[in-house]
Image (cartoon, rainbow, N blue to C red; front, side, top):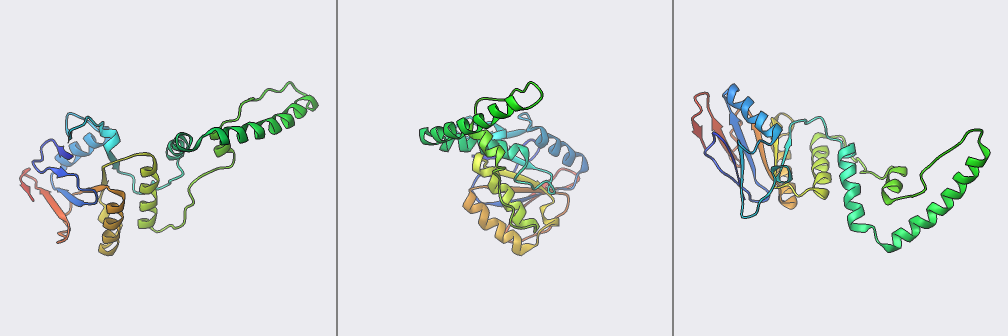
Length: 218
């Protein structure tokens, strides 16, 4: 699998753990690229593979480095869908049905006792149980690198991304944490491309520079 951007000759070949830095000095080109990533515009972003894969299923554009909540509504919704798909079997259905009968008995009695005409749902699903008991990820740390990794891992439970694209990641982590991130990405099988307007010239990691004249140095 290869990821390419319009206007950039370099090809980001998927390796399952690589970190690359794309430095764009041109403000205009920087804006155009970020806009294309935000929209996952297939006219400007190309995924070359034997199989047809939607960009949204292969690329995570992560432009909000302060939005690191694995318990966001979107992630929990996807997680619950995955739990239903993987774990909802006849045994669990029977247990939910038994619990539902008990709860309906309580609601039926309350409906008779209260001063108003009451209505309520009669079916209980696994999703309802997960929501009722606030089934969610436990957040163990507030350091940036740990929260970033936890967020990525929570997404990878339900999505099989190949690339994550970040902005100015090196403003938040040092080289030691970058090496830690690299090791974790290898385990996840995820390539990371960080886009910024400043070069850091790290020997261990690939850097592609697009200068103000749109000349490419790699």
